[in-house]
Amino acid sequence: MTVNEIDRPAVSVRAAESSTFELRSDITVELVDHSASDIGVVRAARVSTAGEDAHREERGDGYKNGLIKYLMRSRHGSCFEHNYMTFLVNAPIFTVRHMMRHRTWSFNEESARYREIKPVFYVPDSDRLLRQEGKPGDYQYVAGAEGDHDMLTTSASRAFRAAHDEYNNLLQAGVARELARTVLPVSTYSAVYATCNARALMHFLGLRTNRDDATYVSHPQREIEIVAEQMEDAFAALMPVTHSAFNEFGRVSP
Image (tube, rainbow, N blue to C red; front, side):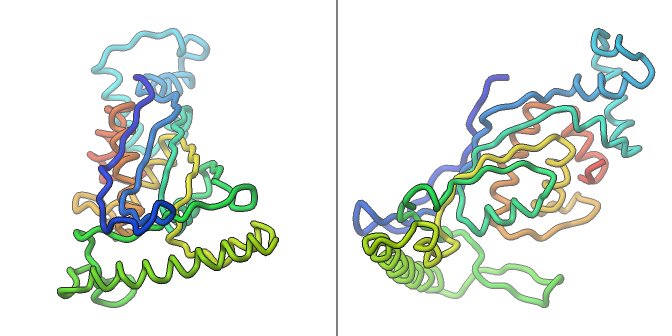
């Protein structure tokens, strides 16, 4: 499979008032590198009984499908670790921080110490559920009242512009970028390289997607779920048998 890009179309929330200030609601994920396949899982498993011949074996689809299902059902997880997928994610900082909770991944992020940050900020699109009902650990998102989205966009735009103006003032006064950045909000966009193996990705997907067919139903924030959905599309294309077994056995990482 060639390296591909998987993204969601940008949604224009509000036209930028100038060429230097931008509000966005799109979050994009691009698969930039990978070495991941279902046959790799089979070979990693077979080395325990076939030794060095495992890498040269040719096995049919039936054997491959059956073995991967067995490994997933029995939670022989290490066989799913001998691969990698690298994604380039462009998302607001608060979403990137959700990603970095997954400590078995490798990350390299755009540095506000070494470059000036562009005034590009996240606001949710009009389809985003804006209100939260219930208590921590047992709540749901519901649609906002009429005018909520406009109020949020107007308030966010005002705050973002003021923050970036102060950021520029500090830079022009000679304050170091690493200190000037402290006035910027977590809705500022950032770019990050994120690399994981299939086992780590399945754990991420189990926590960062809301699926009724999951053994343990999760309720992630919508923005990190958008990232997870795009990564899952790439995973399903690269390792369709593994992805199918992941779904069949309750979306629990082995």
